[in-house]
Length: 192
Image (cartoon, rainbow, N blue to C red; front, side, top):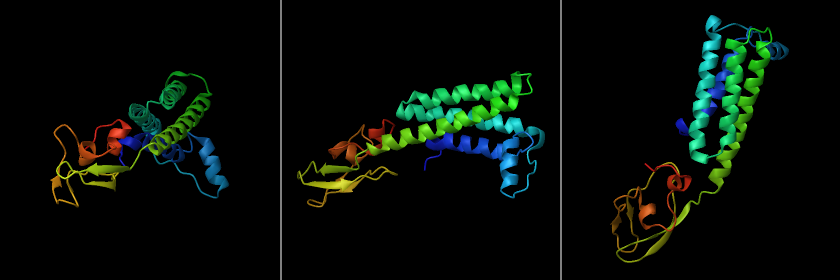
């Protein structure tokens, strides 16, 4: 999978991993670990909230990149609001209840991750993978399955053996000679 398309997951998982590795800052994870018979240890020390904040920022960047693909604003808005709640709770609030803000923000980002994941899955369901290629030389037609992980730059006509290549301005043979454009173009992102 493309790291750029899934960076929101990386940020969310990183945020949860930092929380698990820092039980003194996130006691709920220490409680869960000890209930499961696992010991707890402090791995990140005084840098915990810096790593945590970095993962929150990485999540928000990932949600923005996902928004550019599927145009669903809710996960992005929720992640920004929850990120601000986390930052407020730790860096601004002078209250002893900063942990409530942090856990609330983590929960919100986790919910945003699930919403975003579902939106991406729903968008991918609408992609058509079958396209009929028509040879410009002999007009022979053949239905082909388009690859989802690469562009097809060349295609040999089964009838006249002409080697097809994309027309200038098109990214692949499906965009030039097919009945359906390639999956990246269907998604609204640039092809190769």
